[in-house]
Length: 108
Image 1 (spheres, rainbow, N blue to C red):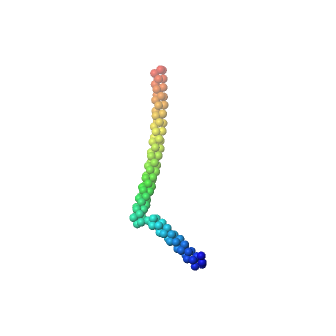
Image 2 (cartoon, one colour):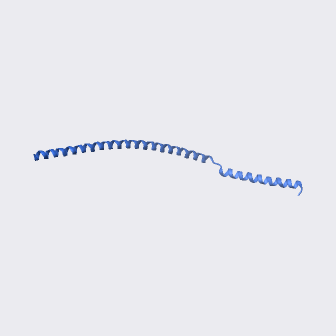
Image 3 (cartoon, rainbow, N blue to C red):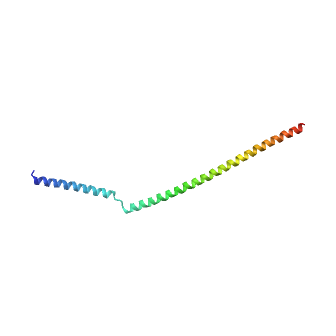
């Protein structure tokens, strides 16, 4: 193989390698290209996701407010219960004192 044949063979090999690389690049670009309809669909999905996140945030805020209200109401109810129990305890003690007083009056 003389020098000219070697140069031609090398040029052919390089051209074939370039052609295969270009073809592979074209195939990859062809299959991974995003069409306008897909971009539109992605935009719709992004908008729906954004709306869902806003709705979730609103729900979380509402639940936190409701929880705070319920905690406050429970604290008030517990305070009223304690007051009622104290009143009942005082009434029982007073009734017991009156019962004792009446028994002493009847006995004496």
